Image 1 (cartoon, helix red, strand yellow):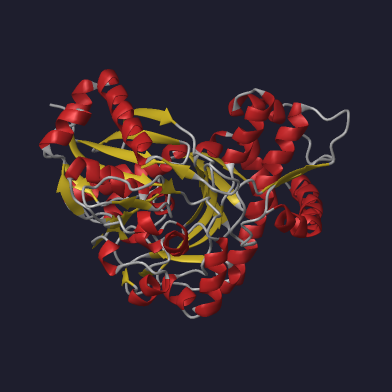
Image 2: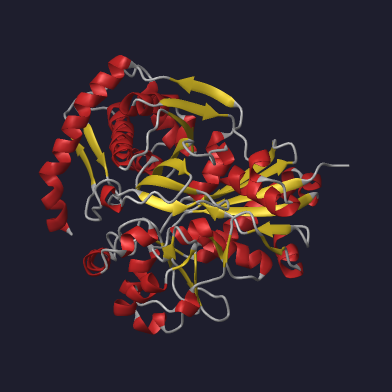
Length: 492
């Protein structure tokens, strides 16, 4: 008889990952389907939720083809997903427009207005208002798309839309609600004041659950559509950042990690809601009961290397290999990776990418190295923001697609001074965390018994010579941003 299986589904910005895990915690099978955001205007980032649903169906079909017996033994399903996305559905559970994503900057004026008119709300909802959060987007919608606003019946996060497809039940978990600028973080309930400030309707707010709560089962229609066993328990799930923490076992105060996906986060678990909005730190509810975390959130990460690869007609993996071959440290090129604006520490939706120092001798490898260094330097900025808020970090785990790169791992260790740990299966961290939430929902086990750290693959200590070189490059990096900051605004 096959062991019980648990499925984690991670709805990211650039693709959906599916991971099947057995009751010992071992990954049995995985699948992924890629997609890209739509950019209808400069600074906008949208996706059709139907694309996620099709990707989920495709990934599950791939799992079924590869290991049908294991999928038939499924006992629980959990979700993680890109945070801050505004999925606006009508009474029939249909999206009224494309989802507005976390890296969308259209609501910059609304965010600035909320910060000015409601300064005390930032400490309630855990962070100062920024354009990527759901609340400012809803205020933008009220002013710019009033007809569509009138059709809204519920506001969900991306992963919640997929869970709705399996269970027919609307809802969200504390950690995804935490990223909407609508939740009272310490009290773990919707903030009536924030909802009113954003000109949202209280009725739009879905039921709140802890991420490990069972919130339904796979229905008969969904079982037929997606090829899953009917009756499998479905967990509320969590945002990708806290789900990644759960996958790493980073649930105890002081546990820290870097998630290097399309975007980047530096996260440390806390025993209480540690508010420091003036430092651009996000203080959010965790996906497990009675736990919180502090986060420095950057809108750009491994997606910057993927962007560079598209420009030169290469794959990100191939470009990374070129960068790693003979790497000796920073050169003449400096790259600002702010392709989608930036949150921590800049709070600048106008910021854009800059490659500075090109010459006739510049190679593809030089460009790739500069891109990767730029992302590593944003993590040094993030470290300083969290330190100013009172969070002390010495050791981090590294997860996400960028964790595959030994060069990036080395750069991050040197730029931040952190000891960087890569774990086995770390590139599937949020999906693995989602599978753990599925197990907790299905079995009722204690989180501390299930959410243990995975096996270590390797440990990278900071290279003193590279650290010194990157510290000098960081001065150029900061100076370049300061020099062009106003030009970004003029361009916008």
